[in-house]
Amino acid sequence: MIIDFHTHIFPDALAVRAMSALQNNCHGEYKPVHDLTLHGLLAAMDRFGVDKSVVMPVSTKPSQSAKNLIWGESIRSDRIIPFAGIFPEAESWRENIDYAVAHGYKGIKLHPEYQNFEAGDEKMFPLYEYALDKGLIILFHAGYDPIGTPPYRSNPAAFRKVVRAMGGGVIVAAHFGGQSQWDDVEKYLVGENIYLDTSMGTEYYSEEQFLRIVRAHGADKVLFASDSPWSDAGKEIANIEAMPLSAEEKEAVFAGNAKKLLGIAE
Image (cartoon, rainbow, N blue to C red; front, side, top):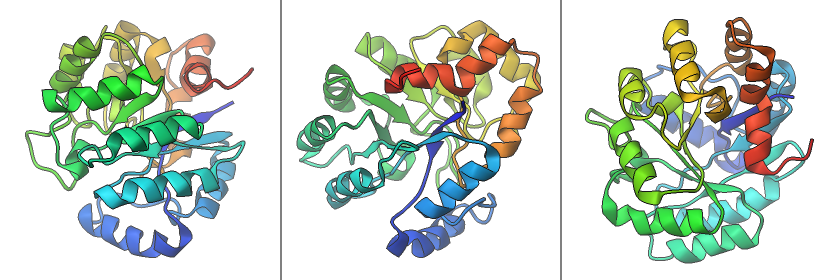
């Protein structure tokens, strides 16, 4: 089984406009592998041999949280697992988290660059604590994003501060802990109580550094992810398959760890 822990889609009525805006934001840096629709994602999953995908919506204003929660329920299936797109500085963030818990969401997605907050800002800690205490996973965008400029609001040092302050719960740093900041991932995150997803990864960091981080941090804390449609899951799968990891380590990365976090039965 392969579970892609980090993908993106939009409602059909918004997908064309969203694709145009996101392509503009990234200055054409990434070539999408599907059209940002549910149908497009499912077709890509079939093409690349992915069994299940976790969809990560990003709410960029307060009014979007409730809409994303309702839409997420509409796309949930045996193959599609939506996370809740929470806007962290909305007055309703507690109500939105309560709704997510009551309606079976497994986690929330936060994007400090798009949502304009510092991941390590202590004023955010009550939200993190509330979500984690409710049993939700928190997945953060991490590191470089074409819309941001250094120093990034989501960086490995900030995530170490967060995980040490929380003292428990499941926190995931996307892009292997910090896109284009993997030296800092080794410095600040290896050995900490945090999961790393591989999204937008193997085409950008070296195999040597990837293996060094996996072996120091533990394959049991690494989740396969693509950031689809912005990365080709097929290439990402092939790159990891070709690495000198054990069969047990590959199984954990591709599906085993995700199944445990998401409560998926064997």
